Length: 241
Image (cartoon, rainbow, N blue to C red; front, side, top):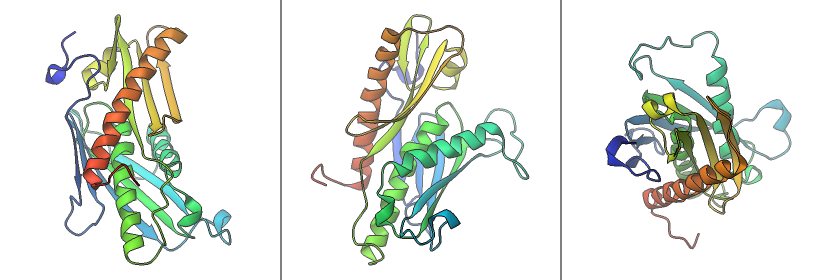
């Protein structure tokens, strides 16, 4: 099938990660993945939830929202109560980031990650995770530079991507049009050493076999490896971390 940007089945959409996108917010990130654009910021607060007090352990949590005109039709702002979808995505982003960093080396601090979708064309949650990693890493590097922490408490680079099946084709990094007709779609979060943080897979129109699952998993691994390369390039970090 013909894909956006003339891509083959195993190609990502064009990805750009703009670090320090906002002049007054160090560590702010704008990630562009095709026509999906997400603005991400990280904020450090000198407190933790009651269950962490006295443990000398930090926390990373996330909030996610879509601007009203991030899609073709206006989305109502979630003022009083967030939707189940938003809640699920926020938890996914937070869980993923907590697997990338050693929270015991952050101290009793909370890093709040805000992900605001400016334009949605599929893969907003996975783009949020990929961009949020860069934002949190840079924020922790700034904390180390200021002497607040002794080292960047990195456990592993990680990123996320979508994969799916349309008719008899297996595709990497679905855009909205592809996602809307996919018979199977998945969101995969994985570390650089190929450990899985989360696998969300849904048979939207037809069930899938273990062999098909493995084929999509291999596509995701390829895409995540490329995304981590872009993260590293953005952060100007060598492989000898």
